Image 1 (spheres, rainbow, N blue to C red):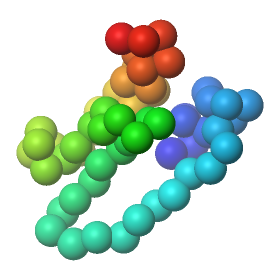
Image 2 (image 1 turned 180 degrees about the vertical axis):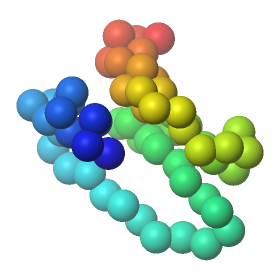
Image 3 (image 1 turned 90 degrees about the horizontal axis):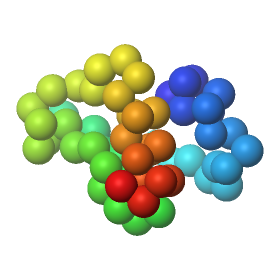
Amino acid sequence: MAEILREFEPDIETIALIPSDGGRFEVSVNGKLIYSKLQTGRHVNPGELVQLIRAVRKGG
């Protein structure tokens, strides 16, 4: 989370952490799911979320 805030703080209007059960960890940007622990079966690697967010910002 800290790396996301450092990288994208000027662009972030809000961040929400939503508690859930079942090991769910999902990240959406502008309503688009960019990472799901349930789908991948693993936690994100260091730097992975920043790369995924950059790709969304570039339209990729």
